[in-house]
Length: 265
Image 1 (cartoon, rainbow, N blue to C red):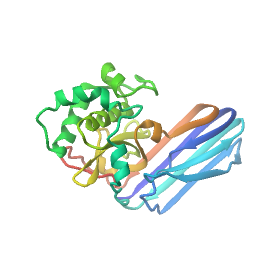
Image 2: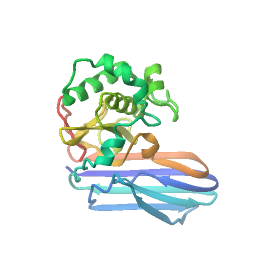
Image 3: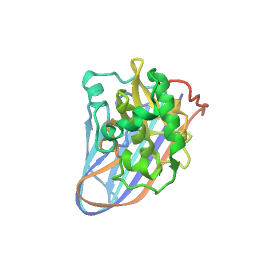
Image 4: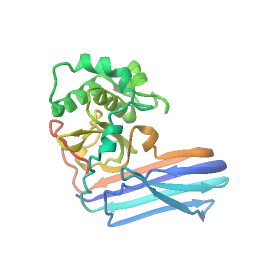
C-alpha cells in the first residue's frame, strides 16, 4: 500500500516565535522520499528535529516576524513498524489527562458499558456509542474543549470524538491514547485524529467518525491527547494561521470493516 502525503502551513508571525510542528510521519516508517522545508519571507529557516518517546518526530523552528511557510512531503511505500507496548506508555495511557478526563467520565462509562468484559468488544461498543451520541459539526468546538464538554455539547470534530473515546476507554481500564494521522479517503481533507487502545497485545485504532479507512492511516504524532499531538504548538511568540493544506492519497482505497481490529501501519 503506497501513500503519498503533503502538508503546507502558512503563518503570519507577528512577533519572534518559537514554534513546534508535528506534521512529519512518525519514526515507525521508512519513507521512500521525504522533505521538510521552512521559509520566512522566501528565505530558508533552520529547523531542528526532535524524536519523541512514542516515535513522534517534531520539528522546532525559531522565526522572526514575517510570513512563514512550512511544507512537508513524503511517500510511504508500505506499512510501518508496529508500536510496542512499553510499560511506561501503558501506564500513562491509563491516567486522566487534560483533554481526556477519564476520572470524571468513569460513572458514565461503567453505566453505559456494564456487562461488556471483552476488550475487543468494548472497542466497537465505545466507537459505536460515541459515533451515535455526537454529531460531526465543523467549527462547533474550541481548541480547549475536552471530552466532558464534548459529551455535554453532543457535537464536535475528529479530535473531540477521539478524546471522548480515549476518556471512556481509560475509564473502563483499557490503556488508550490519541494519534494524529494522515488519512487517505478523508473528506474534506485535513489532518485527522483517532484513538488508539491496547488490546490483545497491540495498539488498535478506534475512529468513531468512520470518515476514512483505518488501514490506510499514517501515524504522525502519538500522545496522551491533543496537547501532545497538535500539528502546531506556539511555545512562545505570536502567529496567525493563514493557510493549511493537507493531501493524503493511497494507491488503492479499501473498505473498512468496523468489526475488525486494526493496527495503524
